[in-house]
Image 1: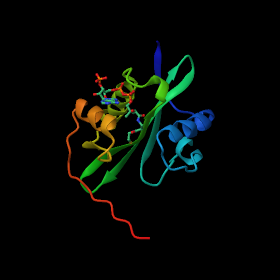
Image 2: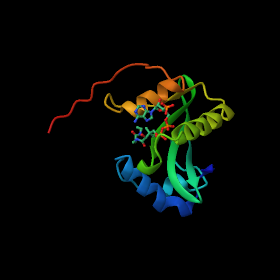
Image 3: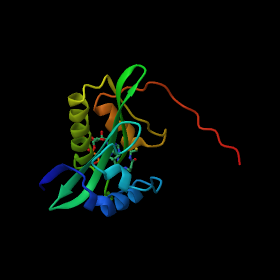
Image 4: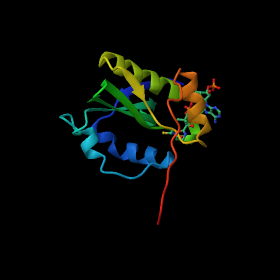
Length: 141
Ligand SMILES: CC(C)(COP(=O)(O)OP(=O)(O)OC[C@H]1O[C@@H](n2cnc3c(N)ncnc32)[C@H](O)[C@@H]1OP(=O)(O)O)[C@@H](O)C(=O)NCCC(=O)NCCS
């Protein structure tokens, strides 16, 4: 199986939304994240797609921006289509994002995972990420 990792383009919007559904991520207006100029006010935004035979089957997103402690990359919305999991695709996507972060001279790469997201947690630990702190999420209706 030949996997290509590419930067997403405007024509990929529909596939990105479909992949987001497999990750149970909140719907959003995707267009602003795909526009080539200053996509967000918070920094540079990247979406990398994994493609097999031209079909997007996974993606990762990353924002690179300045904070008081320096340039930080934040990785989010990583997902691989259920038919293609456990084939190393998430590792390829993460390595592509981390290479971009190095190019952008980031001080650290941050991400969040929920306690029960075992595949994601194992993946991040395999790639050398360490738990910085644990959060408790409160809600009142
Ligand atoms: C998390 C996710 C992206 C992993 O994608 P993937 O392409 O299957 O992952 P890989 O094949 O690259 O796996 C790399 C490593 O991650 C860990 N891993 C991945 N899936 C796992 C699972 N189901 N159980 C335990 N460990 C797992 C393993 O350490 C694995 O290495 P190994 O196969 O040598 O044991 C995928 O399960 C997914 O899309 N989940 C739903 C969305 C999600 O949870 N996103 C992350 C939260 S933001």
